[in-house]
Image 1 (cartoon, rainbow, N blue to C red):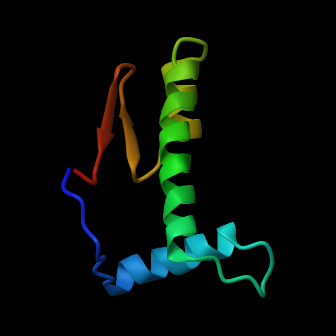
Image 2: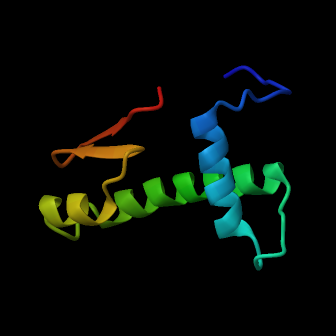
Length: 86
């Protein structure tokens, strides 16, 4: 992974950042810095993956898929996780 100091914001990325900012904000008057929003989103992604791995052996595959499937983590069968981002 290369380190970058700038982030290109197309319309879809800006929409997602605005939506995530609303989730991270304390109230409707709070405007959290983009770095906090990105940190929260990355932390959530990592924790979601860890939670998914923790429940895989405890629940039927279809239950896990129905509960945990998102456009970022697409579950395929019981042992495969696919990311559409890379």
